[in-house]
Image 1 (tube, helix red, strand yellow):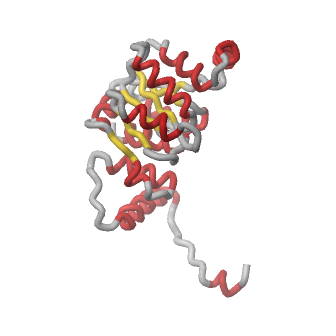
Image 2: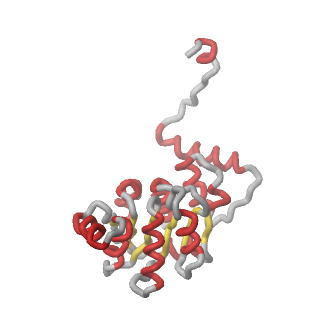
Image 3: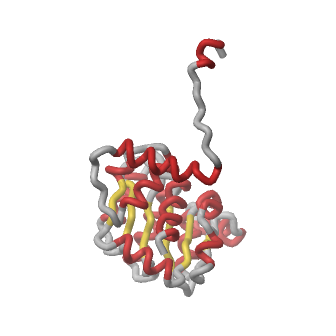
Length: 214
C-alpha cells in the first residue's frame, strides 16, 4: 500500500466491549431523520448491524403484533427450528435455554437425508416434515432454503403444523420471492425480508434481537 495512502487511514481505538455499542450508534446516525417503529427498531437495527445493509429498513415486513407474539413465545419457552447449521450456530442458545427453549436443525440428520432420497425431495423439505412432528411450541427461522419455507406453508395449510411464528428470510434467486409471498399471505405471525435478500445470519440476528428483548 502506498505510504501516502496509509497516512490517511485512521483506525478508531475502540475496546471490544464498545464495538457493538458504537456500531448501533453509527446505524442510528446514518438512519438520520427516519423514524422506525420503536417495537420493530431493535430487530431492524440488529439486522443492519449484521449485514451493513440499510435496505432492511425497508424490506423487513412484520405481521400485526408479530414482535410481541414472537417475543412472548420465546420468553415462554418456545423452541426455534432453523434450516441451516450456520443459523443454529449464530443463535444465542445459552440465552434461549434460560427460557426453556432449544434450537433444532435437522438438515444433517441421517433420517432426513434418507427421507429426501426416498421421497425424491430436498433435505430442506424433509427437515420441515421432521420438525412438524415435534411436540413443542415452535418458531421457524428460515434463512437459506425457499423450499423449506414453501413446505412449511403447505404443512400449515394441511393443519399438520401450527407454529408460533415464522422468520422467513431465505436468500437467493429461485423461488425465494415466491416462497416469502406465501408466508406474507398466511395467518401465522411473521417477520419476512421481502425480495431476494436474506440469509442464515439474518435469521439468527432476528432471533437474537427477540431473545435480548425478553
